[in-house]
Image (cartoon, rainbow, N blue to C red; front, side, top):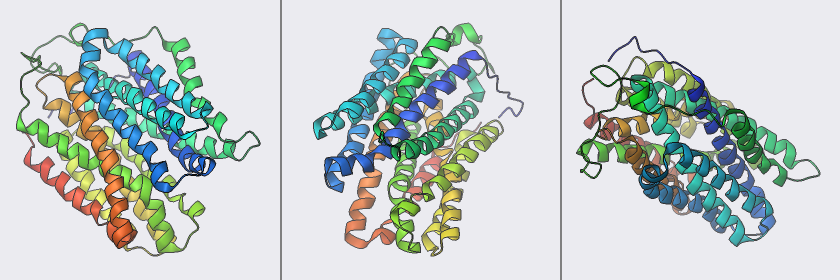
Length: 393
């Protein structure tokens, strides 16, 4: 692999970074709103969990439609339309005070938001060629930072006399502001931006968009599913285990997610540097080892400092798994980044919906501590798949 690759952060790249940050304000905003929404609606945890299921199903639907949408309307239109639909879903939640409206809002936002997200990832991969993995990791780091800021702002607004709902206007306002300031900017087509040829960094053009994918592509999808399942399982259940193991109140235990998000932010910026020197599959394998070490520290810990350290280390490992897993799918797609991104959305949707559900079901039967053994099992499957499908670079 060429170790002299450089990242050029031009105006189109910054546009995608900021669009991804806008997406993150929706994702982390609705996640923070879910406990308060559950209390307001007076529903059970299982019913409240349907909102997450709706987001996952919406993501799968968006992935199925993505290739056809980009062929028909182009990437630019699909990205901005996806952000618009995402905000429409958020507004349904803001103004909806009944379960059907909030479920519809979460599902619509998940569908449109994920469609925009995966188009952005395909655009960055094409626009930056061999530096695509590094740029995708860096873009996701920007998203995590926006997510941390959103959760903090949400907690402040939720404690104010206005209540939590005004905090959900952040993605709407961010999208409008971004459209006004940078709406005319877009990424040039790959053929216009970089000449084709050996070493150019462009993806080879597929001879037939309907040709079957190779076995490495499907293995990469399974790896991505496992990685996303790990991340969402930690997101939704780590605070519960932290509370049980340390005796912290549920409110204080929720701060454990801040430790994990801090690790993720640091890891994604650091992962961008690693991706310039090593192949995505190698970075992914290393990150799975780091996640396993963090899980072991967290799972065995009984004091808050040890568990916080374990969560931060877990976040450091988890940080690059989605960017590298997605990059790997695009890399082995045979020059079909849009189709690969659509397929990745489906794999990721299944992972985000099934991982937390399976861990929760195991927790009901065997306890949360035992249920968290699901994490190393997923890590093992992902590592096996990543190792088996590596290609020489």
